[in-house]
Image (cartoon, rainbow, N blue to C red; front, side):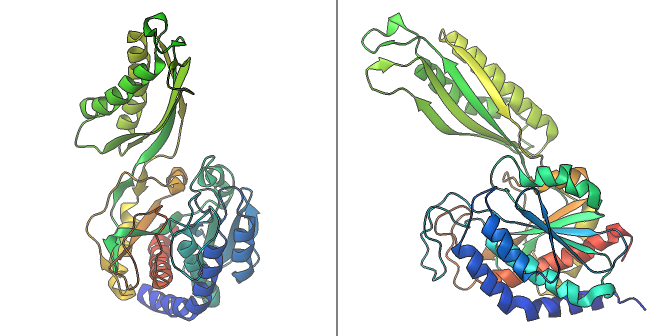
Length: 395
């Protein structure tokens, strides 16, 4: 007789608990040796060594492993392999040297998924659906590892659902944000080029100043977001790079900027793209310059499946967790690319108030989740897997 969902969760979580010492040791190894996007060779090898079954190489450096029943529609659980170009400033004994760091919790996510995969493998045919562990490359940089996986391997796997958990320092320890609908924004990048006419700084009227034009463009872009986008829909524009000139007394021939565009609604995403083009071309022309925009499309908004979320929220108490306050942000995650092929859901695991955790934002050089976060993430991955098994016709 098949096990009930409550029995499955209890046995799966017990298995995860047994795997945690090894998972924490793996977390330390991964944290010590982070690698950038598309170069996660040692990271992927370290993960593969700890998996209970042979895994396949995908999307360059990625790995996937399948455990559980031989038949049935699979439920995929995803973790990320890559670190960030950040020099670590923590006091951890397992901190990374050099200029690369796991500053977004990917080391925790990977270790947790290894623990879950090992626990699930021990249950074997008792699992409600095959579990495919996806260790995805290049979440932090383009080209996106999730987009490549979604385009290639995911189509062959044809999962019933894909789920993931991500730690977050702005949510309370012991809580998990699991909300239906859009929880993360889409993200696009734009490169702005303003071409003017160079001149001596003492004779500005002889040239056309691209720096002045670009400065006005930056101000206009921020102002227009508030005037072009319905304020009920989150949207953010950030100009993060300005480049121009080589000395103080020369008007240069061109100036460049790079910006990110984020939105929750598809129509706002399109409106932001069109607004940037219009403002850059128009303001540049008003200064006697030529403006152009190159769009680098990113991930879509991340939209949680309401059925998976509802089933997962009902199991939080049995996993020793409580629901967090509603959580939606203009952060982005390429996990959203999987949503074109299957229902998806991501839970955000709180860190604020955890013993030993110093409050720091994601991507900060002092961001260091405690080892206890490995178990918290693994529990959320487990209950999301069981919740998503309903999409495979189980539950």
